[in-house]
Length: 121
Length: 134
Image 1 (spheres, chains in turn red, orange):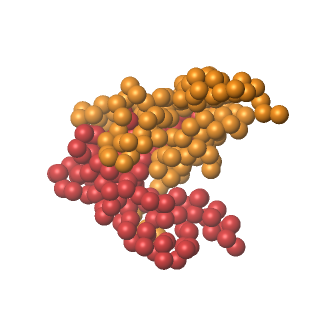
Image 2: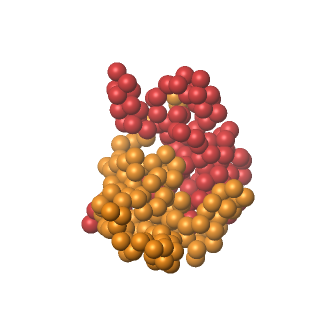
Image 3: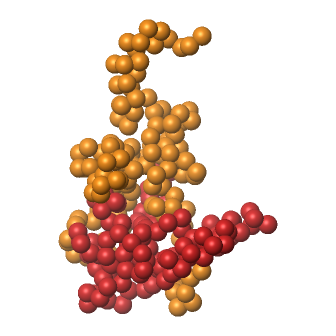
Protein backbone atom coordinates (compact mmCIF):
# COMPACT_ATOMS: atom_id res chain seq x y z
CA UNK A 1 0.00 0.00 0.00
CA UNK A 2 1.03 3.62 -0.46
CA UNK A 3 1.85 5.42 2.76
CA UNK A 4 0.26 8.69 1.66
CA UNK A 5 -3.14 6.97 1.75
CA UNK A 6 -2.62 6.15 5.42
CA UNK A 7 -1.56 9.60 6.65
CA UNK A 8 -4.50 11.64 7.90
CA UNK A 9 -6.81 8.61 8.12
CA UNK A 10 -9.10 8.66 11.20
CA UNK A 11 -8.18 6.17 13.94
CA UNK A 12 -10.95 4.40 15.86
CA UNK A 13 -10.91 2.10 18.84
CA UNK A 14 -12.48 -1.36 18.81
CA UNK A 15 -15.92 0.13 19.60
CA UNK A 16 -15.74 2.69 16.82
CA UNK A 17 -14.90 5.63 19.09
CA UNK A 18 -12.87 8.37 17.45
CA UNK A 19 -9.28 8.65 18.74
CA UNK A 20 -7.63 10.98 16.25
CA UNK A 21 -5.86 10.75 12.94
CA UNK A 22 -2.70 9.08 11.68
CA UNK A 23 -0.08 11.83 11.91
CA UNK A 24 2.93 9.73 11.03
CA UNK A 25 4.19 6.20 10.52
CA UNK A 26 7.20 5.07 12.54
CA UNK A 27 9.72 2.63 11.07
CA UNK A 28 12.53 0.78 12.79
CA UNK A 29 15.56 -0.46 10.86
CA UNK A 30 15.75 -3.93 12.37
CA UNK A 31 14.47 -6.12 9.53
CA UNK A 32 16.45 -8.43 7.29
CA UNK A 33 19.86 -6.88 6.53
CA UNK A 34 20.19 -5.91 2.86
CA UNK A 35 23.27 -4.88 0.91
CA UNK A 36 23.25 -1.31 2.29
CA UNK A 37 20.68 -0.93 5.10
CA UNK A 38 18.35 -3.23 7.00
CA UNK A 39 14.73 -3.49 6.01
CA UNK A 40 12.57 -0.78 7.57
CA UNK A 41 9.79 -2.48 9.51
CA UNK A 42 6.65 -0.58 10.50
CA UNK A 43 6.85 -0.09 14.28
CA UNK A 44 3.55 1.72 14.63
CA UNK A 45 1.45 4.77 13.93
CA UNK A 46 1.67 8.18 15.60
CA UNK A 47 -1.91 9.21 16.38
CA UNK A 48 -2.74 12.87 16.84
CA UNK A 49 -6.08 13.57 18.56
CA UNK A 50 -6.39 17.21 17.49
CA UNK A 51 -4.72 17.55 14.10
CA UNK A 52 -4.78 15.66 10.80
CA UNK A 53 -1.03 15.76 10.28
CA UNK A 54 2.19 16.53 12.06
CA UNK A 55 4.39 19.52 11.24
CA UNK A 56 8.09 19.72 12.16
CA UNK A 57 7.64 17.13 14.93
CA UNK A 58 8.02 19.47 17.93
CA UNK A 59 5.75 17.19 19.96
CA UNK A 60 8.27 14.35 19.55
CA UNK A 61 11.54 16.15 20.35
CA UNK A 62 12.77 18.27 23.25
CA UNK A 63 13.60 21.27 21.07
CA UNK A 64 12.04 24.45 22.54
CA UNK A 65 13.15 27.11 20.11
CA UNK A 66 11.98 29.33 18.54
CA UNK A 67 9.77 29.61 21.61
CA UNK A 68 6.46 30.80 20.05
CA UNK A 69 6.63 28.28 17.21
CA UNK A 70 7.65 25.38 19.46
CA UNK A 71 4.84 26.09 21.92
CA UNK A 72 2.23 26.66 19.25
CA UNK A 73 3.07 23.45 17.42
CA UNK A 74 3.40 21.45 20.63
CA UNK A 75 -0.05 22.65 21.67
CA UNK A 76 -1.47 21.88 18.22
CA UNK A 77 -0.21 18.31 18.37
CA UNK A 78 -0.86 17.82 22.11
CA UNK A 79 -1.80 14.36 23.26
CA UNK A 80 -0.06 12.57 20.36
CA UNK A 81 0.82 8.97 21.08
CA UNK A 82 2.28 5.94 19.37
CA UNK A 83 0.28 2.78 18.69
CA UNK A 84 2.35 -0.30 17.87
CA UNK A 85 1.66 -2.48 14.84
CA UNK A 86 0.56 -5.34 17.12
CA UNK A 87 -2.37 -3.19 18.31
CA UNK A 88 -3.74 -2.46 14.84
CA UNK A 89 -6.76 -4.63 13.94
CA UNK A 90 -7.57 -3.29 10.48
CA UNK A 91 -6.38 -0.64 8.07
CA UNK A 92 -9.32 0.47 5.97
CA UNK A 93 -9.78 3.12 3.32
CA UNK A 94 -11.68 5.40 5.69
CA UNK A 95 -10.38 4.43 9.12
CA UNK A 96 -7.76 2.50 11.04
CA UNK A 97 -9.26 0.28 13.75
CA UNK A 98 -7.29 -0.69 16.84
CA UNK A 99 -7.57 -3.85 18.92
CA UNK A 100 -9.39 -3.80 22.28
CA UNK A 101 -7.06 -2.80 25.13
CA UNK A 102 -4.40 -1.21 22.93
CA UNK A 103 -1.51 0.58 24.63
CA UNK A 104 -0.71 4.27 24.15
CA UNK A 105 3.06 4.60 23.96
CA UNK A 106 4.94 7.86 24.14
CA UNK A 107 5.64 9.18 20.64
CA UNK A 108 8.76 10.96 21.84
CA UNK A 109 11.96 10.49 19.84
CA UNK A 110 14.07 10.57 23.00
CA UNK A 111 17.47 10.01 21.39
CA UNK A 112 16.85 12.68 18.79
CA UNK A 113 15.63 15.03 21.53
CA UNK A 114 18.68 14.50 23.73
CA UNK A 115 21.03 14.98 20.78
CA UNK A 116 19.40 18.24 19.80
CA UNK A 117 19.31 19.51 23.38
CA UNK A 118 23.03 18.71 23.70
CA UNK A 119 23.82 20.45 20.41
CA UNK A 120 22.40 23.68 21.75
CA UNK A 121 24.60 23.72 24.86
CA UNK B 1 6.47 17.10 25.95
CA UNK B 2 4.33 14.00 26.39
CA UNK B 3 1.54 13.23 28.82
CA UNK B 4 2.65 11.32 31.92
CA UNK B 5 0.00 8.63 31.35
CA UNK B 6 1.72 7.38 28.21
CA UNK B 7 3.81 4.23 28.41
CA UNK B 8 7.48 4.74 27.45
CA UNK B 9 8.40 2.90 24.27
CA UNK B 10 10.37 -0.29 25.01
CA UNK B 11 13.89 -0.19 23.54
CA UNK B 12 14.14 -1.34 19.93
CA UNK B 13 17.21 -2.77 18.24
CA UNK B 14 17.42 -0.56 15.19
CA UNK B 15 17.40 3.08 14.26
CA UNK B 16 13.99 4.75 14.33
CA UNK B 17 12.72 6.71 11.34
CA UNK B 18 9.46 8.64 11.21
CA UNK B 19 8.06 8.86 7.70
CA UNK B 20 7.06 12.54 7.82
CA UNK B 21 10.03 13.76 9.83
CA UNK B 22 12.87 11.80 8.28
CA UNK B 23 11.85 10.59 4.83
CA UNK B 24 9.04 12.40 3.04
CA UNK B 25 10.05 15.40 0.89
CA UNK B 26 13.76 14.77 1.48
CA UNK B 27 16.10 15.21 -1.44
CA UNK B 28 17.58 12.01 -2.88
CA UNK B 29 21.25 12.04 -3.91
CA UNK B 30 22.98 9.22 -5.74
CA UNK B 31 26.27 7.65 -4.71
CA UNK B 32 28.26 10.48 -6.38
CA UNK B 33 26.25 13.18 -4.58
CA UNK B 34 24.27 14.11 -7.71
CA UNK B 35 20.61 15.05 -7.01
CA UNK B 36 18.19 12.43 -8.35
CA UNK B 37 14.75 13.44 -7.12
CA UNK B 38 12.78 13.96 -3.91
CA UNK B 39 10.83 11.44 -1.85
CA UNK B 40 7.18 12.11 -2.69
CA UNK B 41 5.69 9.04 -1.07
CA UNK B 42 6.58 5.59 0.27
CA UNK B 43 5.38 2.12 -0.64
CA UNK B 44 4.76 -0.49 2.06
CA UNK B 45 4.54 -4.26 1.59
CA UNK B 46 1.15 -4.31 3.33
CA UNK B 47 -1.40 -4.51 4.85
CA UNK B 48 -4.27 -5.12 2.45
CA UNK B 49 -6.87 -2.36 2.74
CA UNK B 50 -10.05 -3.27 4.58
CA UNK B 51 -8.95 -6.74 5.69
CA UNK B 52 -8.64 -7.89 9.30
CA UNK B 53 -5.03 -8.23 10.44
CA UNK B 54 -4.68 -11.53 12.35
CA UNK B 55 -2.80 -11.35 15.67
CA UNK B 56 0.88 -12.12 15.14
CA UNK B 57 1.04 -10.90 11.53
CA UNK B 58 4.59 -9.70 10.80
CA UNK B 59 4.78 -5.94 10.39
CA UNK B 60 4.93 -4.66 6.82
CA UNK B 61 8.24 -3.31 5.57
CA UNK B 62 9.17 -0.30 3.48
CA UNK B 63 9.50 -1.50 -0.11
CA UNK B 64 10.34 1.61 -2.07
CA UNK B 65 10.63 5.37 -2.17
CA UNK B 66 8.15 6.80 -4.66
CA UNK B 67 8.52 9.85 -6.83
CA UNK B 68 6.46 11.18 -9.68
CA UNK B 69 4.29 13.99 -11.00
CA UNK B 70 2.79 15.10 -7.69
CA UNK B 71 2.75 18.90 -8.06
CA UNK B 72 -0.85 18.99 -9.29
CA UNK B 73 -2.13 16.58 -6.68
CA UNK B 74 -0.30 18.46 -3.91
CA UNK B 75 -2.25 21.58 -4.87
CA UNK B 76 -5.62 20.07 -5.74
CA UNK B 77 -5.61 16.95 -3.54
CA UNK B 78 -5.44 13.23 -4.17
CA UNK B 79 -2.43 11.43 -5.57
CA UNK B 80 -1.34 10.15 -8.99
CA UNK B 81 -2.34 6.56 -9.79
CA UNK B 82 0.14 4.01 -8.46
CA UNK B 83 1.23 3.11 -12.01
CA UNK B 84 2.46 6.68 -12.62
CA UNK B 85 4.75 6.69 -9.59
CA UNK B 86 8.40 5.77 -10.05
CA UNK B 87 9.93 3.41 -7.49
CA UNK B 88 13.40 3.52 -5.99
CA UNK B 89 13.80 0.24 -4.06
CA UNK B 90 14.70 0.57 -0.37
CA UNK B 91 17.64 -1.83 -0.91
CA UNK B 92 19.32 0.92 -2.98
CA UNK B 93 19.20 3.41 -0.09
CA UNK B 94 22.56 3.78 1.64
CA UNK B 95 21.86 6.41 4.30
CA UNK B 96 19.10 8.63 5.64
CA UNK B 97 20.17 11.97 7.05
CA UNK B 98 19.45 15.52 5.99
CA UNK B 99 19.21 13.97 2.52
CA UNK B 100 18.48 10.41 1.47
CA UNK B 101 21.62 8.97 -0.08
CA UNK B 102 21.52 6.09 -2.56
CA UNK B 103 24.21 3.47 -2.98
CA UNK B 104 23.80 3.38 -6.76
CA UNK B 105 24.38 5.83 -9.60
CA UNK B 106 21.38 7.95 -10.50
CA UNK B 107 21.93 7.86 -14.28
CA UNK B 108 20.12 4.63 -15.12
CA UNK B 109 17.29 5.12 -12.61
CA UNK B 110 13.79 5.70 -13.96
CA UNK B 111 13.45 8.66 -11.61
CA UNK B 112 15.67 10.81 -13.86
CA UNK B 113 13.88 10.20 -17.13
CA UNK B 114 12.51 13.75 -17.46
CA UNK B 115 16.00 15.20 -17.12
CA UNK B 116 17.40 12.71 -19.64
CA UNK B 117 14.57 13.45 -22.09
CA UNK B 118 15.13 17.22 -21.83
CA UNK B 119 18.87 16.72 -22.31
CA UNK B 120 18.54 14.45 -25.35
CA UNK B 121 15.59 16.10 -27.13
CA UNK B 122 15.95 19.79 -26.31
CA UNK B 123 19.38 20.72 -24.97
CA UNK B 124 21.21 18.53 -27.51
CA UNK B 125 19.54 20.43 -30.40
CA UNK B 126 20.79 23.82 -29.22
CA UNK B 127 24.06 24.66 -31.00
CA UNK B 128 26.88 23.83 -28.59
CA UNK B 129 24.54 21.79 -26.43
CA UNK B 130 26.35 18.49 -26.99
CA UNK B 131 29.56 19.30 -25.17
CA UNK B 132 30.69 20.78 -21.86
CA UNK B 133 30.98 24.57 -21.75
CA UNK B 134 34.57 25.82 -22.17
